[in-house]
Image (tube, rainbow, N blue to C red; front, side, top):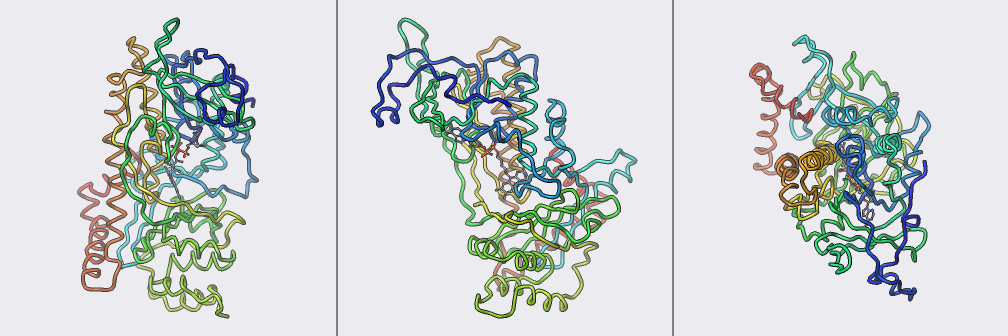
Length: 510
Ligand SMILES: Cc1cc2nc3c(=O)[nH]c(=O)nc-3n(C[C@H](O)[C@H](O)[C@H](O)COP(=O)(O)OP(=O)(O)OC[C@H]3O[C@@H](n4cnc5c(N)ncnc54)[C@H](O)[C@@H]3O)c2cc1C
């Protein structure tokens, strides 16, 4: 796959560019920037999905588009791993996300052997004996409906490669400006002999391989798909509010002892255990061939400790987190380095004393962790005050960053991309300027409330499971109340009144 870099489109070195000025490069006479209809900054899942959706619609495929990405997209398109290895960055895609990717032709390019649909969830709380099971397989059988999954686990790199292959199939590789950084964004100028670009964003691009190589492009619509620290959002002066959780998400690829533990009689199960006293939940999400993706949200100190462990000790800690009491886990996480007793010894000794398993039918047992797959990411909550501005739209993490406990970040980004592509198609069909603020309101109106509701809901869920982390009476009351709530939603009453079914629908992203 041949992907352009800024170097190839470069016809002009911006006289205003600080980098060029600093390095004392010769100044070039001012010429007009290249004009594009849609310029997306960021080649993560959200940006690539937007470009793919625009190019796969007959209403918008003719638009002049550019997607700028610092990293090497040609390399990402060729991404591959041996069949028994999985990337530690995997996400659960909701049925709505998969449907969007199917309808736009991208899902056919995602390697199906590396994806894993699941149709059951088991959630339990280490602070009390409450647990809840969701079984979409049994639900479908009960209503004689066709089998459905709650989500499909997919490595982010598999999805990205699939999107890039679909872009190639659509003949749109020319739109990809890979290995290219946006070095600055400014408003254009009113050229008395040419175009009035005074309210158009003009981007200065820089090839990462050649710092002297610059080009400028103007965007009728500039899309920020540039992640948490979005330069486009900063240029547009759009505020983003929220907080850091002071928590890290520890990720790893693990192998589970018996794949039938994760796949109980046709039900492929995802597990989540809330560990409020340790800073957040641990989730085991199924991948093919008995593998699973681990996401353990915990304090930065615990994350650093987990990352420092040998493979054997890491596995012992994860098994402990699925089974033991939080006091045992706290002891193990603070174990003295000099101790001759290993974490595996600690776990095996304590495991014998576990009474019952909170009434759970299944518990995963971790066998091994893939070499070099343990990593951690800081967890944050942010939401932009608006998703649009004059000639500006934000999608994906540039618009909102959400705690991973409900696995919704990437799904929100795909839904944004789909909605923005539909808005652009609507504008084109009705002869509207695609960068006009009023026209873009269609996108903002569709996505702002939904994004805020999802991000706020996940944030509230996270806080609910942070309360009651102490040992006092209030803590016990809060934890008890939470347990009662979980028991209620797991009860026959919630099932009969359709409440549980409603939660299951929400989890599917519908
Ligand atoms: C531990 C963890 C687990 C998660 N699990 C899930 C899950 O199960 N399900 C789910 O839906 N989500 C999950 N998420 C969230 C998900 O990973 C993110 O929401 C998603 O990757 C964001 O995609 P994006 O395209 O919006 O942004 P990004 O992936 O951040 O992409 C932004 C891109 O912009 C580029 N860029 C930035 N600045 C510039 C510039 N100046 N010039 C050029 N390029 C630039 C960057 O190089 C990057 O490639 C998880 C997150 C974490 C931390």
